[in-house]
Image (cartoon, rainbow, N blue to C red; front, side, top):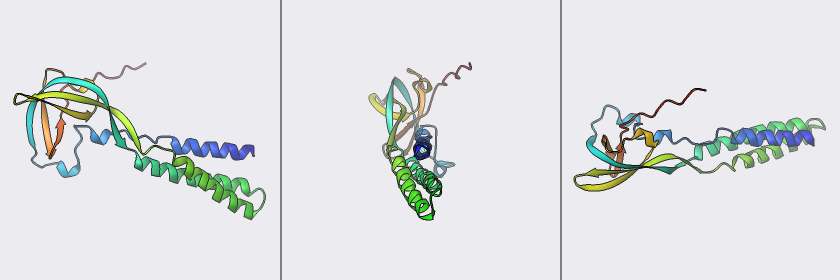
Amino acid sequence: MKMLKHCLALTVVASLVGCQATGEQYESDVFDASQVNTQQEAKTVKILTVSPTKIKVSNEKNKNAAMMVGGVLGALGGAALGAGKNTDTAIVGGVAGGGAGALAGSMVNDTTLVPGVLIGYSESGKIYTSAQVGRPCNFEVGGISLMVMTMSNETRIQPNATCPEPKKS
């Protein structure tokens, strides 16, 4: 019984490890392969404000992966525990362990919050905002930045500053 608890705990941990989407693919300076070597409308804007915010992104791929890994690890653990008795017990243990592992993996959230910024900018005498995945240090208030428009209502304000390198300890 103690071994079963350890296997189930291992299944849960393995299912949940690394199951957070980073949102990196949504950063303003990341482009899809279909956007490379194509002309896109752009203009310059003056950044008025930069406020930290959170952006909700899909975590569905990681949830599905966690369910699969949890199911496989649970099935292997359950079968191994049940094999000590007989073949039928191994089969039942594998099925139960697989179900428990998949259930543990399904507890991973469908969405996750990633760091972002809400940028206030002026254009043609009007003030607008644009939410971007990124860090406040990527954008300089008062600075001019290039804004790329890839489709209707999608604005990608390009970073106009560099974040400091993390300090090494």
